[in-house]
Length: 578
Image 1: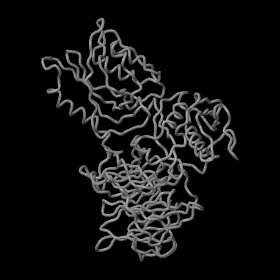
Image 2: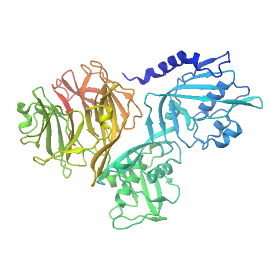
Image 3: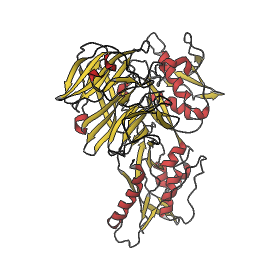
Image 4: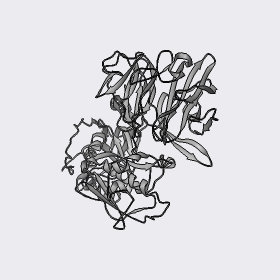
């Protein structure tokens, strides 16, 4: 069960326990503690209210937080809650701290108001969200009387906004960049305020570049380019006029176009269906590309493209590899019981989508062995260790990754007999704990890692950085679901969304969340015979779980058997080839 639901109550309880020693000044005999009421989420933005005459310090602080939930540039109503001096230096463009609805306030006779809340996360000025690491938000709002009315004299360095208000005002969108091979778009989640200025804001974010954690692992064709004027939308066509774009033989113009088109086409409220790209007012002409471009023109860059040949696989009770569409054995020796696999991964050929190579882990009495070979062919031992994580692959590179002995990330070229394993540098892993699960994102630019540390297994996401000089590394392994305890498994539902299994033994529960940790949501378990224990997912295919020793797939909001109309298939360790 997620702990997010209980954190507001815990924060309030802690607050009540601490108020005796947190009142300022100590000579004030009267302390008022108020819990902000829960407010329903509204689809229509209510206008912010200015300060009421005779409002108490507590009402002024609450009004200021409510007035921050406005789409009006500068939030002028919020500024009315400040003294003239504070308003002259206050800015609404410094970022946002998102807090839970049930925040508490403590008011003293001197007029100071202390706010304590559950912190959901922060959004920087570029629109990137960072999930809070279970730390509360606290701030002491000092106030002064101005012409007989209380006004705030100092504010936090960021906007403070309630979670429902943030969800109502801001849209989650993807700023798309390119993987290092320039084959696939990579989503970088951003949160932009709704309205007609959103297309311009999104293109500006693209030009500014990826978020700091993702930047070392992707490329930005728009780097160095300038937006000549605001993006206009007429009908269902957006027009982007660029400046300072040097058009030459080495300029990745097609990648740039795909980046703009896929990014703008997701703005559903504006119903953008096509994008016209101009340079200094003149159309950007590309061979075989229409002036008004759509995502169909750049389907090859689809961030969630899946080969038509992609079929789920799993292991039966003997460790034999089977296909999830029919339950029949996979071709070759791996489909027979002989190898006794505990986990496996399959790579697809990028040229035609055919399944090309297979890697499996076999447990032995004295440790584990990594087996590799062609899909449908014999497998040969390649690497030994005390333990191996389940192998994982990406769509953009023919290689397999595993974690050996919980500490060493190893990558192996796929389909290359007896290829030498190569270490992946992960400088922060040792300080976090023991890696139990590692999953490459479909585009190969990120890894989701379940790391068992001092607080138990937690989910982290890092960036894959490739360099000719320094090799391959995993950087910035950041926690993205700190409220989830006992994380068991993780899989990529799409390039920007994760599915996670978490919970104590016998109480495992699936969740979905964004790659940045936003939008943690419980997935129903109705239809499953027992709590799920392993998970497989990929873009465009139904997620798979093993529960009670049988396999199930998620279709139309419920769990069903892999073969419709038949009894559930027995097995474990489901996965999809990439």
